[in-house]
Length: 81
Image 1 (cartoon, rainbow, N blue to C red):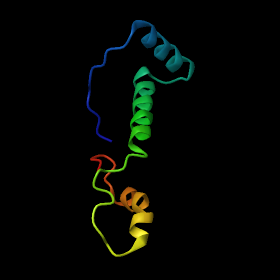
Image 2: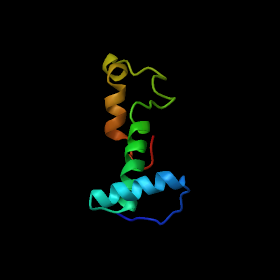
Image 3: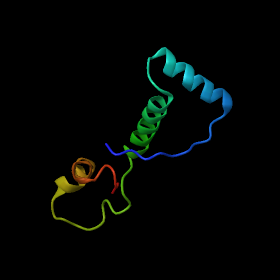
Image 4: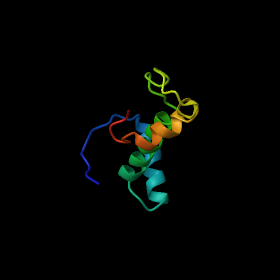
């Protein structure tokens, strides 16, 4: 995995909690923040249907019924829809 350094601004109390959580779990604040961001993005990504879903006619009912599964199998998780 290629990582890129970035800067975020956190409330001082929140940063203290992150550091304490990291210390108590034997990890780093960076790992805690990365895990939180990954979980947030995954949650926002799931359940999001592209605006073009349902447009047109394929002649097969299964496409409409299985649109979510078809799209999730073929979508690039990094680039989105």
